[in-house]
View 1 (tube, protein in one colour):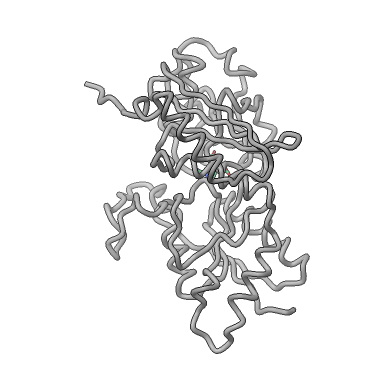
View 2 (cartoon, helix red, strand yellow):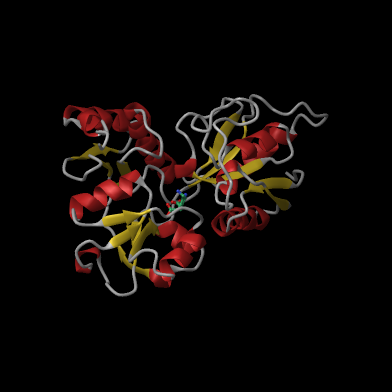
Length: 328
Ligand SMILES: NCc1[nH]cc(CCC(=O)O)c1CC(=O)O
């Protein structure tokens, strides 16, 4: 079946464009015509010098309610200027606006976090008090659990911006997602990839989410087959094992009630004929750790596995660990 040109919306960062082009190439291989439209989000504008983020979007939606990299892209999708949004799954909130759907979760790249450092080839080699460039509460808490002497420096911006700040000496080392570094061709900067139980990745890390309009709420156009046809074309890029894994991981996050500011890691993968879901919550000072690994046979629903792991974490005091004590 030939369908109209699929218009992909993407942020303008090097990583986002790599991801959009990667999906465009796979759709073109399947015979579809594809265009990429660059959309600027408030998350991108926050990186401009002097930009002060507003408390809400112009339509009143709070910045926390929607991912800061998501809102303008979904607005463009809703009005039909684009047909597909390519996101890093870990940047997507766990609840999706019912007008949209995740039509496909393609096969996942390396989910692990990576250690970027020139002078020392592993975290354990760093001198006492070394400065790590990361603003992620999850990475900070898990790193402190491994090395309580570490210090952190604010490090925001795209991966390329962070690598530049690090090479200028603003931090001794960086911790970033392997998938991002591999995709933008900076794997040579990676000296160590953390094991899953050392630095458990963020739910969905390394996976892409292909978001389309929900076929139940198609655009009101003359051609009523357009949206269902596009949905079907995108759905072909789905990888069912990745889809299962990220659903289990995101269920843990949803049940514990968190977004990307939660010091929670979750990673699910298939081993022989079982799913293994690893999850870890660490107190912000790194002193207390709740760690769960649950194994279930294939066929167990992903949300059942995710809920069971969330209950187990709760039983081990995860919710108490998450109560951030204000520092005087
Ligand atoms: N939070 C920003 C972000 N969103 C997705 C990635 C990398 C790609 C991925 O994890 O899928 C990154 C950078 C990072 O965490 O180092």
